Amino acid sequence: RNDQLLSSDWSAPVEEDGWHWLAGGRLAREINGTATTSSLRLSLGKAQASDEVDRRYYLQYDRARTVDTAVTDGSSDGNLAALSANYGWTWREFDTLPYPNSGYGLGLTVGAGTTLGGVRKPFLTTQVRWLGYWPLGAVPEPGRPEDGDQSATVLRSHLGRLALRLQGGAVMASASAPIPDTLLFLTGGDNTVRGYGLRDIGVEQPDGSVKPGRYLAVASFEWQRPITSDGVRTAWESVVFVDAGVVTSDNNHLDATSNGSKLDPKIGVGVGARYNSPVGPLQMDLAYGVAAKRFRIHLSVGFSF
Image (tube, rainbow, N blue to C red; front, side, top):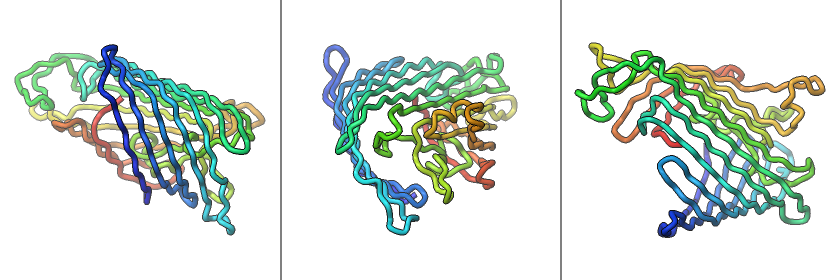
């Protein structure tokens, strides 16, 4: 992607109650198919972080302009702007970071705002993400290469673990509300639906292009299994996965029986290898996009939730 990004974040010292001020600015130019979106985002708020729970509340200003070069006159939706108040909450309980074997994480962000400019319309936003790990058996096993201690004993099975990742989002507003594209949803890529390019999944247009949508659903299922040598776990693991994701702007599509319409999720399947490096997991995947009918290689580094 020929994306361009300039961003800056500022953080004040932590106060006695654990909260601290945050401010940020972001200028971006994103190319999604034939559409180019130029955007500005400013935010100001406070945050509190701990090992298990993070909290944040903030005001956010968004302004975006999208130009579609596929249209003869290079049509644009104009400069759309919005102001919103948001609250984010994240809870996580994983056993061993950054290489979790079991545990769960839940993140929730909600917001309320209004569009700006000539047409002012209220809107609500929500995003939810969830991640869970289930070990397939738990038997003592010597060695833990990621810690560099071959004599350690940990409860890990040769069968590995199952991982499930879920993500959903919605922007609720009247159909005529001019919502900036940066508040809407596109998906696809390394950490979402593998087998598709970055932001390749959206609301499909008659010409084959995609646009951001108001509703998002993503699911990913993995079987992560350690690779052993002489009965001892190495720093490598094998991965088998299935990803699926969909973006729509019609809430009727959320009901498969409504008006005869149904969701058309994009599915990706594949295999990969993960290396537990000293700085965190490095995952390399080969994925096949069922709808795209092509293979893609995906790389991801580190673990964060």
